[in-house]
Amino acid sequence: MPELVEKLSFYLEFPFVRYAIIVGVLVSLCSSLLGVTLVLKRYSYIGDGLSHVAFGALSIAAVLKLTNNMFVVLPVTIAVAILLLCRVGRDTRIKGDSAIAMVSVGALAIGYLLMNIFSTSANVSGDVCTTLFGSTSILTLKIEEVYLCVALSCVVLLVFILFYHKIFAITFDEKFAQATGVNATFFNLLIAVVIAVIIVLAMNLVGALLVSALVVFPSLSAMRVFKSFFSVTVAAAVFSVMCSLVGILIAILAGTPVGSTIVAMDIVAFLLCYVMGLIRGRA
Image (cartoon, rainbow, N blue to C red; front, side, top):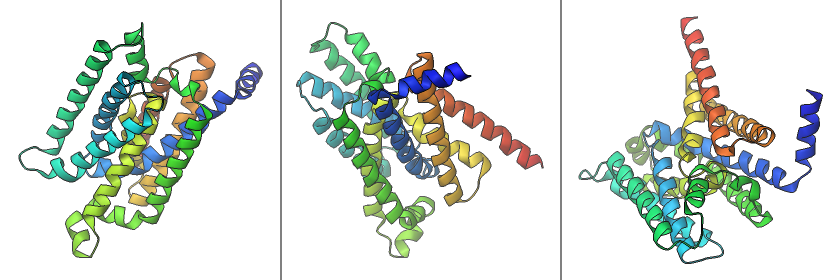
């Protein structure tokens, strides 16, 4: 045990490790807050769909050889999020889940196709794997990326706190919320933009294929134990931050992939909460 603590203290002296922990905690916190709303509105799959869109946009930025791909990835992901949550998802001709699946698979395929056709790297498969599964990208963050993540995370948290009651209203009964004077269209738009920002930030942490785990698992874990919207939201945030923190530390010490390790911790937390829920139900 002392050797483990000493090894961890040694790694914490490096700035890139501290950057990874800061970004990991902030992204996990933001993902879990909006994750409860998405799960209750039956849009759990939106995180997976938007992460694939972000992967496609990232491929376009790589083809164009842009130094800062955020100028392409973020606007494209926000635009598709608005389309899915505020437009297509309500069209009776294209149901929400069908639209998400169509966009998800299409963006993933086009992104991979572009990276192969216009490849500027000798290791296309390695680049794609890193983008999809996160790999060590979280451990190679620049200080500018950390500042951007902190700024965007603060905006997300501020939006959630300021409009908590409005988000609560449209989560459970959108028509009733409209009847009481809540502009449901505006807040659906706001949620779409915030979710897109979270997805883009989370790609560096766990990769495109594992992003939805940060959105879904903490919320489902909290719902096994708690019942009210507020308690579920708080518990989901705590579970998400703890799983990410433990996952990052284990990945650093054991040399495992960061994204996969974090998701594994989320799975363990869900199983524990599921068992706790069963025990409480029988009691």
